[in-house]
Length: 397
Image (cartoon, rainbow, N blue to C red; front, side):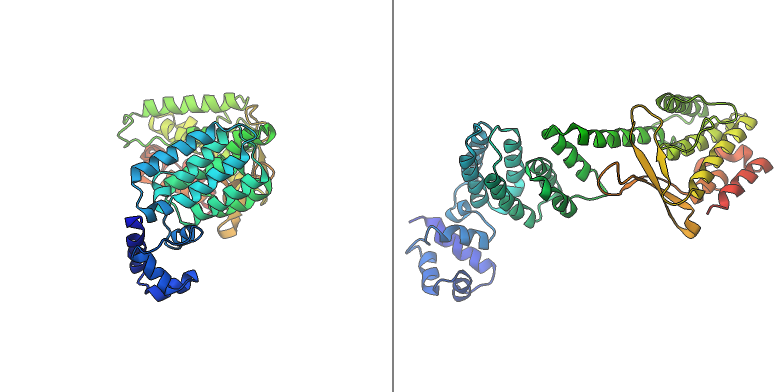
């Protein structure tokens, strides 16, 4: 008789403050049976063991007191077997999925990433992903996510699992476990479509990824009090020149003296980045004593802010870059008089509607007139021409 089984059942029952009678009633057995188990007189029936394990959210290994190292070794052996399974071994894959689900409790599963590892091994294996296999895997997924795994265990699981699902099940799964605040949804879909060789769908997410990275590069501020960069306006202006040159090359544009930021063209998907680059360039020029250039740059930038904030709700902004041939964003207004503009990925560009960038006149006005972090505007803040530009922005608030 296993010396651990009865002891572990008794300790688990007491941890839930259950009497033998209450526990027996929950399982549909007599309290005499529970008493015999706990006193090591008899074992529970084989069919009852996984029921007891699930009731206490532990594994059958835990009930029998199998050492942790033995459990890890068995799990490693199962995963090694999975990845080498031939195409016609889906029945064996199902047996392994069931074994992992029944033998490893939630604590072990989370700490050792059992479900994520299982999905990953199946992802890279050549075994045929039959409907029966997918259904068995879904049972494991339901159990895994119901136990509210930590962020690390969850992130390691969902990426590979979504590649193994049927297409019809993907939207509901993403709605339940992915969020709009992070890149989880897009990352999972990107990996899924790569896995399925659906390159037309991959392209959608490639463009979104590239657009996000480019915007982060172009829209990055250079605070003069930032310890990682020298407090040097010439350095800041040099960086601004490089980024603007890059943007104009990326979009096949040629700036002019009157339109150093927009090139005299209509707003595009990089409108928000252009506004930030224009404001930065203007304040650098102001501090360098190049007042007329600073004012002309700000005129071009303010004109762009006005176009975005007064455009009809739902206006589509297109890309002029060959690297982003089909990417578009849609203007959605919010705030008083609908003057604040959120730029969203267009519905026809990717599933869902999520923010790509934004334009807030209140922030732009603050940068121009009051924000001490933008002190390089000081040389022109009392200039009537600059004040007039700021007033145009203020009207949009």
